[in-house]
Amino acid sequence: MKKILFTLFIIYGFGLNAQKTDYDWKKMDPKQRKEVINNLSPEERKALLTKFRNNMVMENLDIDPNDKTEFTQVYNEYLDSQKQIKSQFNSNFDPETLSDDEAKAKLQQSFDVGQKLLDNRKRYADKMQQVIPCQKVLKLFQSEGMMRDKMNERKPHGDNNGNNASRPRQSP
View 1 (cartoon, helix red, strand yellow):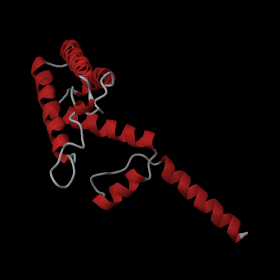
View 2 (cartoon, rainbow, N blue to C red; view 1 turned 90 degrees about the vertical axis):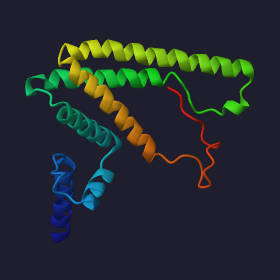
View 3 (tube, helix red, strand yellow; view 1 turned 45 degrees about the horizontal axis):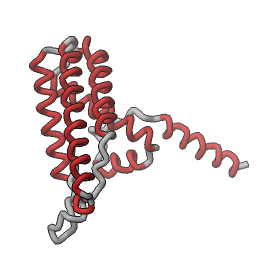
């Protein structure tokens, strides 16, 4: 009987932990945060990162509470659209192995994708200006570039000898 109660208690405890997704991240130490994040499913991790990113953008831009829902929808739509366009270019290749014709085609493809990204950015800048002022859209794009630069600083490049040849440079 004790074993059954203990098992039910464990299952109940895990069920509560699985459902608890509203953590007080600021009060957790880094080790606790890492443990919680590592125990999340990939879908939960993605949702959590999206929530963190959206909250950070909202705070940075000081979005009016009445506009947060609409802006978040447009912003996430923009990011999804940019991601979809970027997926059209496979940057995982070694330029040294391409023939001249293949390299020219790949270069042209990178220009085409870059232009699509720019056109998409302009289109969504217009959509965002219907929700937030132009100054905040500009600030968003500036912070987007700074975040990308920060992420690139953290990425390991090449091997330990400073050789970047093993890792192809990414385009768009």
